[in-house]
Image 1 (tube, helix red, strand yellow):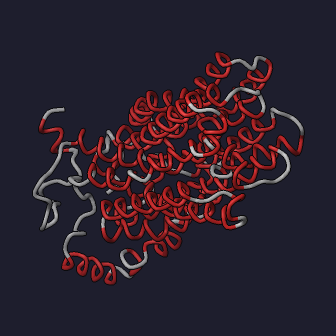
Image 2 (tube, rainbow, N blue to C red; image 1 turned 120 degrees about the vertical axis):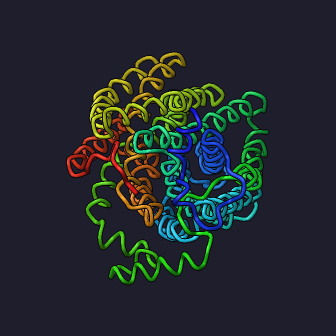
Length: 458
């Protein structure tokens, strides 16, 4: 990218720079890397729980039956998502007032706190009911943090791009989520392969959470030179001027209460955005996270082999996400969403049939790879389109609310619903029904969302 292009597509032009702009600026590639790595570190803390759900269920939820333990562990994974909308409102508003960087720093340290609690929480055998309570508390803290991180980091990525490159820039949000899954699943494979089962269940499973505790200082260091993209957040005078301008426009919530403005003036975008998100988030959490657990419980694969399913899925999303973003920049967000989501609905059931008919690692990895490609092409345009629906002053809050409402139920509890459907029906193909239903429902909302690719968003 030449210097003129970098200048044109940076987060702020010279005329729009705040009075006290940072003295040191970094290039766009370095900015994308800093946001992506920091976001990936934070999601690493949140998602490693799912890779050790079977062990955590055994140690912290000692009920009869392995499926019941898994349901409780998966339910606790989902509990973290309950706090996402709350974190989205609180931390999203903070990002729209204090700036994207301030909010992202706060969320990193909250994630670190959650990881520390899980890393050192005694088991049920040691302290009884206080043990699962500590795990749930940690998940609530982490869910609150992630609720604010997604809106702030995605808004920052989009605001670094131009009208013609926002899809590519925004795709790195999903790349970061894939990177954390690559690292988390690979770490799980190493631990499961190198430790005996008693050692893994006794102390080995805690190692990823101890590593997660380092993400706060590491992420803060990586992001220290990022440029702020929210105009005027660095001066009290500018903030006061924004409040006065908003009052004169008879919309005081624009600065003071972003969430109130969003629900009052953008209710249609919220509803359509939430429903559209359902299809992508359900597929994401089933394919990237649940299928490895499914392989352990339903296909009787050892953990050291089953976790390669998550690794393969994550690697495919990392590779395909930038291409999905660029394609959505070229032909539009909605066409990419339509085609990829319809294809996903069509192939998910045959995919589950195939891995049950031939429960081998090569077949599992092949099916997962195909599904992951479709997940990338259905999730990236979705996650890019959501913040584009809102003006800059309330973008982080709007993105956080819409994304977190959709993800909190249909993504966070996807593993719980999938396990429950198997228990209820006795059919190992039941998770496919859940994904098909979510995919079809999400398609109903697409006609009500405007195309945002290539258009100025402010």
